[in-house]
Amino acid sequence: MQSMVQTDQVLKMDAAGRLWTPRAKREELLDELEHSGMAAVKFAAFIGVKYPTLASWVHKRRRRKAGTAAGLPAALRWVEAAVEAHGSGLRVELARGARIAIAEEAQVKLAAVLLWALGMGGAGC
Image (cartoon, one colour):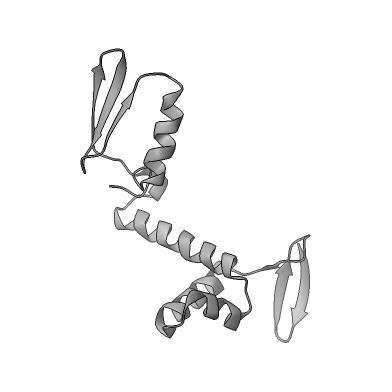
């Protein structure tokens, strides 16, 4: 990473010219966003970052908080499920009533993607 001096602090820049914001600074900015009452789009413009960047910070922070709420990183959380053989396949019933039937090996990946999209693949259910 290259460095660029601005007043009294050193700002790191990657090869594409993007500024790197230290985690402590990101957390400080996210705290300000929560207390500002501003829309995220306007807040991003106000602090000089692109909205997708701010949105990714918010998303990562929420995932971290969701993981720590259960005492585990989000990727390691367990989901209560009942699994049983069903004919020539497998049926999975989740705690909140969602059910999935898997009849072929190719459907396993699709089921995993679906559960992740429903928020059951790491954020709990």
